[in-house]
Length: 371
Ligand code: UT7
Image (cartoon, rainbow, N blue to C red):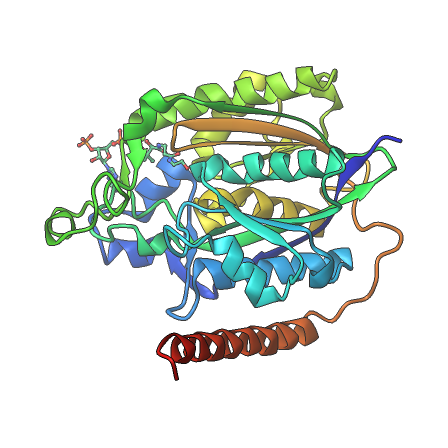
């Protein structure tokens, strides 16, 4: 019996605070006109001080689980793709697992910059299709506002915060994730990076003084690379699935720059209305941009069960990839779930586990001291 990995739920978490191009005009030497004509971005969301990559990820995951009608306790795997993880370690996914009370789930982060969501979706789908697990939550979540230099007009105008999540479930009905392609060219690692804070250049007063803890990007080479791989990746995945571009109902691209999307559309000889565009309102939310765009397209009725959709992205690494899916929706045995009850249960469970761990550590120490 063949197994398929259906996308059965989706959800987003978008911070309330909106930073407009007019706001940016007060912060750096730029204009709304320059930003709109060069990028298509008009505004972006900025996380509140109490919002982090993990809290946004957990909110998006819970919304997606509610949509799919899946209990957090039925989740086998959580993958968080992020360019702004909560810490170098532990994985943000582990923190999310605790926050949503996914007590049975394994959890790990996947790092492939903005392409991360596509790679994570493919990994989860392959684990489901192989029979290794039944239910996965894949999340793209970012608080890029925390690593952007708000005095650098070359980068600060581009990015925004937010999260998007998909629930993937095993099904014997054909549909869901069909094919994917994943690529990387590490010779371009230095054109888009966060230079310091890793093991090569640990954080020090010197790295902070030189601003090495901020996003570094050489815009033009990234732009050239992006315009090439968006069309190439799309063609490659469509061919691999044995389909042609005419079979594709919708393309959900990584949202970096409207000119990159126009160039991909030209390269594929497709009209722009085949592409979902959200960057005007959210800017570039890195790994979160594709699931946010997909959730919006589904809410607007642009993405319907049976549609063939290509998710295509690129980013630091350099990395790029594309994934072709047949859009499905919740499985027939969907249950009504109440996420707020699970969030409360998750908080109680987490507090209980923490108290128990402290108690055990204290009693073990007493025993060691012969007490
Ligand atoms: O997730 C992947 C992340 N990254 C990307 O996808 C980024 C890809 N690259 C891009 O989207 C574009 O390269 C940018 C939007 C970043 C820049 O657009 P561009 O058309 O490539 O501009 P440029 O870097 O060639 O700069 C043109 C001019 C420069 O001035 P001079 O040297 O010609 O006098 C810049 O200093 O525009 C200037 N400039 C700005 N002016 C006003 C750069 N940023 C700004 C700004 N406002 N914010």
